[in-house]
Image (tube, rainbow, N blue to C red; front, side, top):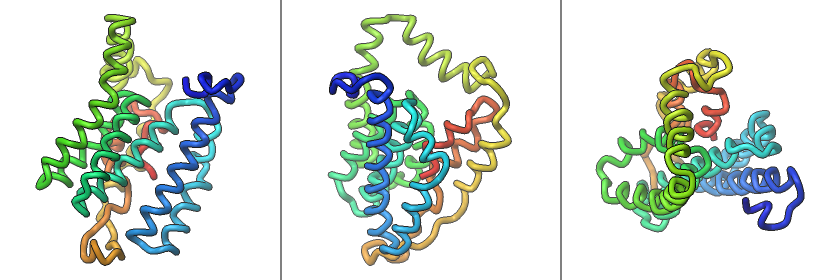
Length: 231
């Protein structure tokens, strides 16, 4: 929509915003990793992510997986910093990013972000602010769509593409559990120590917390659904 509003022609209207989001997240990822792990590790990690086949492929096509991966990844990075450093600004920014992730691909982002409830269990006020901000970003659009399209939108988007996709094979082309489960379960692994003086002695998850949830998604989960949890 933004691409067409800016007057971009044809496929470029869908592809260019995805490419911009991919680059923008890499810059955020570099800054975040540098803050907690040092420059060398941050550069290596960013190069690995930015040159991976999945990241390059999804940044070139006009689908919702890159907006989901970029906004969800940014939300989780900012949420970690907000909880670890008691930063309200980061919590608000994280909530806005997760709200955009909900706009990108529905309830996939909240499902992937469930481990955040455990990580922030002692800072429940921050979590209320975070999810309140996410709701404020996403809810108006869904209410507007419901007002325009009525029951058809709710049935198609929420029931068919959320409930049926998870519970049945109605929206799946084949069984991808052989991919999603091995990629998801490493999210359970212990993290590594941060090098930042402000977080000395604290552990940061080695994989995105959402990857663990992706490994539980079952046979209806497509490989691209794990994509949002991989940065």
